[in-house]
Length: 47
Image: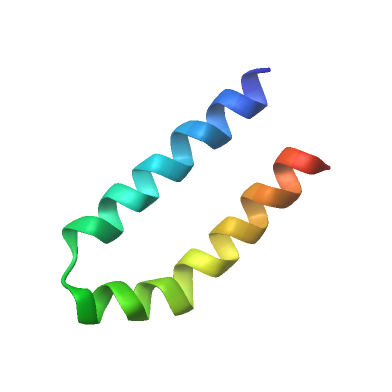
């Protein structure tokens, strides 16, 4: 349960950071950082 809570806290934090950035930067962040982070979170949650 602790691991699930930790991953849940990380996801909204990342989304808030991207929301603060301008649209142009947001797109670049999504392509570079967001996808690997989501993959890492998904693997951590399911596996």
